[in-house]
Amino acid sequence: MRKTLCLAVLVAVAVLGASAIPGFLHWPAVELQGWNAKLTAQMKDSTPKGQDLGKFGNHGFGITRRVADGEAEVHERVTDLFLTEAGEAELLVGGKVLNPRTAGPGEGRGSGIEGGRRVTLRPGDLVRIPADMPHQLLVKKEFLYFVVKIQQAGPETAEGFTHWAAADRASARSRLASQLAGKTVAVEAKAFGNHSKMMVYRTGDGEVEVHEKQADIFIVESGEGVLVVGGKTVGAHSTAPGEIRGASMDGGERVELHPGDVARIPAGVPHQALTRKELMYTVVKVTQ
Image (cartoon, rainbow, N blue to C red; front, side):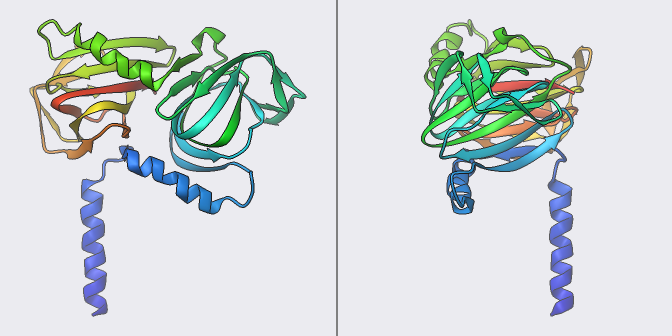
């Protein structure tokens, strides 16, 4: 019995190892939102509770739940991307940090912020806070948010702060659809140094893509599709330095995509978005 069990475990490990793609992560929306209950159970008081979801060179992921206002924070060389999963908060950005202190290398904290700009964050909202910009979360009742942290070579300018409300991103569908003009994909992009943010709308399957030095972070906005990752590119050809395209993929791992899902595709890994009628997603591209 014991030998049989050990053999079964070894077979299971071998199967998992064969299908796993190092660095590829997929967080279904229901899984991300489920962290609210998990973190609630772990909280002993009003101290925020977070979970590290993976680190990959110059960027990493986490999810945090808060039930009280946070401190003022300044990350000298780290850009924050927040995706609201549940609850509501006021994000105070810019201004002057009150009672500043050093919390670690390149990390500042304070009791609050004087001046600055206030932005209300609700479920589905996405916000980008440039490196070296003071910010503070003021929580009404509870707030659960997915975080992407991107390491920068140095401080950024305040002009890089951007708030993409869920409603505004949803309204982009009609604007992008009007740009198709006989094609099956429309794209809007904005660059921020070592990373960029793209809004992609598809009514047909995409090509196979390989970005040799860029990791892709997909945030599904609407529609449904399938993400194929890690197979062999058929008809591979170079379209630009470090960029390869192909007509199709042989093999690979298939992941269902639904609104609210987030996925990370490592640099150098072939991937293809297959569309079911239509699919809109935000892509954050991080150069490594």
